[in-house]
Amino acid sequence: MKVLVLGSGGREHALCWKIAKSPKVSKVYCAPGNGGIKEIAENVDISLEDMDGLLDFAIREKIDLTVVGPEGPLVMGIVNRFSEKGLKIFGVNKKAAQLEGSKVYAKEFMEKYNIPTAKYRRYTDSEKAIEELDMFNYPLVIKADGLCLGKGVVICNGKEEAIDSINQMMEDKVFGSAGETIIIEEFLEGVEASLLCFISNGKTIPMESAKDYKQIFEGDEGPNTGGVGCYSPNPLFNPELERIIEEKILKKVEIGLRGERIDYNGILFIGLMITKDGPKVLEFNVRFGDPETEVLIPRLKSDIIDIFEKTLEGSLLKEDLIWRDEKCVTVVATSKGYPGKYEKGKEIRGLKDVDEDIIIFHNGTVEKEGRLYTNGGRVISITALGDTLEEAREKIYENLNKIKFDGMYFRKDIAKID
Ligand code: AMP
Ligand code: GLY
Image 1 (cartoon, rainbow, N blue to C red):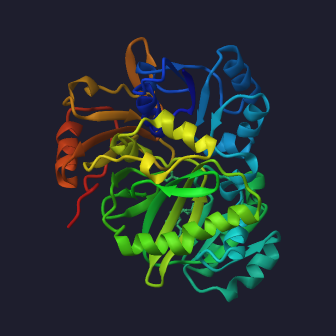
Image 2: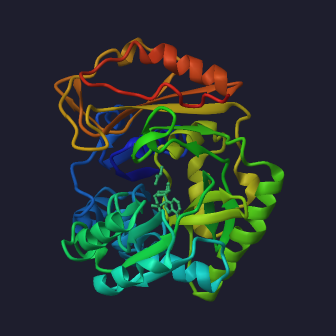
Image 3: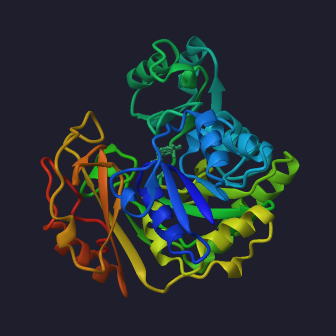
């Protein structure tokens, strides 16, 4: 089988790594790929915005399965386009992708099907939004409706900040049309957790749990990032919490998908806040998480191609997902300046010196004439399995000292459980 993976981050590197291990697979392509992916797959220089180019490539190269990494192409309807041409593609269709592509759509879905989430109001007019701010307590949360590369959510501690954010999104259009509609919602207090599920023929099948670290600095300080560390499983997920999530969220998502006649075959990533009143949904994503994928994939024993194919046929069962008992940790090394404006083009050294049981997934690297350079805010994810989280994290931190690039930064408290 020939497989094409779409994307260029650590998530896609982990997917290519696992896909390449399948006995069914003879060749893996990745568009556009990165410096690390290049070692296991053939990078294809086609941008994800060029849907015609991707389609032509898949037809010309007789690709048997395309796997979509990020949300952009899903929201743009790539699955519909490929399916119309009879090409097999793993990902959700355009209608289903609205659960991530529009926060208003997601909130209305949750409201209609009684899925616990933060109270909210939607606005298409900035004056009205400002006028009604007094209906909320602080902090409050302002979200742009559309996709904003993970930057469309602002937590505001006071009225002035809230007015500024509303004006930036709706008047200055810092997120373009994505901020024409906004939602304002109550701030939820609690512990965040991610739950990724396969959905096959509308049935949710949860993966193992994971814990993502969003803030750039130790002790969860500083600005939010795309995720700078992760581990699996997440000890927060005890059988009681799992039962509540199943009953109050997953079952209702299934009812909602049927109610809205959404054909859903792919991934649903649920961002949760575990509050004192139980778990509430912060957001839906319709794709694998990054860096969640970097810790889930190494724990997955089953052949991932079987899983993708069964999901698409609508026949995937919980029993098809077989997981290793070992724990997995990843620490993301980032470029100087991230998550703000960051440096690029710094040579990365020492990757070949790490121990054999360390897995390195590349988030943002490029290879030029045999040398590897930084090419993103998140650069590489150093990953290890271990019988305990402590064992995995120790292996990672010992090996991180061998890797160097100018301005390299990483948190030292990933998977540190006190
Ligand atoms: P989202 O893209 O909706 O997940 O928001 C990004 C991040 O903002 C989340 O991971 C949370 O850390 C935070 N966040 C979003 N909504 C809320 C909320 N209602 N209450 C507290 N924090 C939130
Ligand atoms: N790690 C969060 C995300 O992938 O959206």
